[in-house]
Length: 279
Image (cartoon, rainbow, N blue to C red; front, side):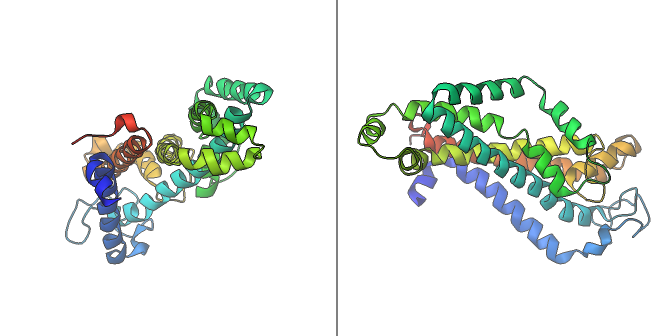
């Protein structure tokens, strides 16, 4: 494994960025007082200082503390929604690709129909249908509703190719049950693809949640990165020159997306021998 990782620079770089970011977050989580993320805790709109390393926002919250609390909330949304998406994608993609026929036609038709509808429109419809203040879990479930389309299409195409391989055909002709072929023969070989799709589904879910929250349809009681961006838009922090408020969530989002993209590409290289880097 270590020898392989030394050749897969993309995966190592992505894991490195994510690991360093996690260590920095843990350090600040230990240092900060989580109560400083409460509204009206301090004088609003203070510039960075020794007392407030990233200043305070318009609502009197310590920006650093809000970021420390809000970053895992945003990632939690992505993981839950991504988990829902990849679980449905595996079930539907493997079912459609392996069994084919009318089952494949129905699943493919449903995927094509839903992919023709802008995902943001579907998310907005679900978001506005929830009464009261939305929770992080509710937002995760809403985003997960549209997260299964991509994995289903990709995994279906991979299963269609794999089921024609000789050892799969022999297993089918020998009378091995379909579920054993799927879980013991096909799934282990497609696990890197599943993992790569999970990582990208998480990234897509994070982006979708930030979009929903930036429109003012998120969990107002949270300090997630998306809600931080929403309040920046609401109070026109860019025009006010409050750079210490709007820049941290942007930087963190960029770091998260770059690391997840690199990890996904590294896993894709692991799954596809034609992409392996030669030294």
